[in-house]
Length: 145
Image 1 (tube, rainbow, N blue to C red):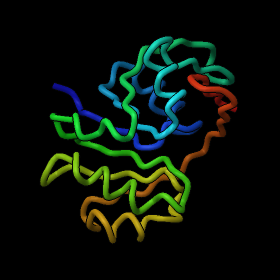
Image 2: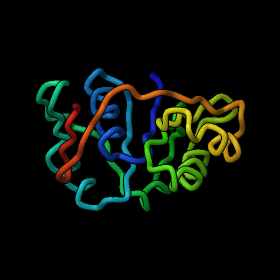
Image 3: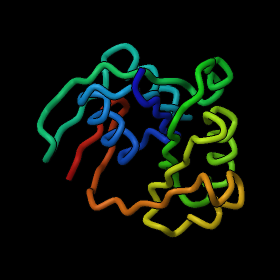
Image 4: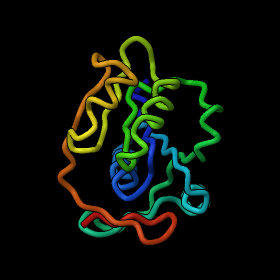
């Protein structure tokens, strides 16, 4: 079985990355707190547009309150939220992270690596730099810029 990836925060960046990884065949679950976005992704798929081309990608999407239904742990959890939401998102991800070898990757350009490490442990924290731009202007549609 392949690597299971959970993305907490399916805004513009999380949706573009999650959608493209799903399109490439990876096992990705998008977890978000915007109800209309989650429902649109479930009913119509995730629409990606912009420099990545135009795609409708069937994705697995959960409302944040549905995370408790996750039964199979994630090998990787990507944190793709605003900085002020980092700690709770990391704590949520840790609950569903495969132990002892799962890792949490924060998509915050290294700014919050220490904050993530304080929650999940330094040995499980991977920082990253996101070099793409993205926007989201309606539920279920992310645009790579």
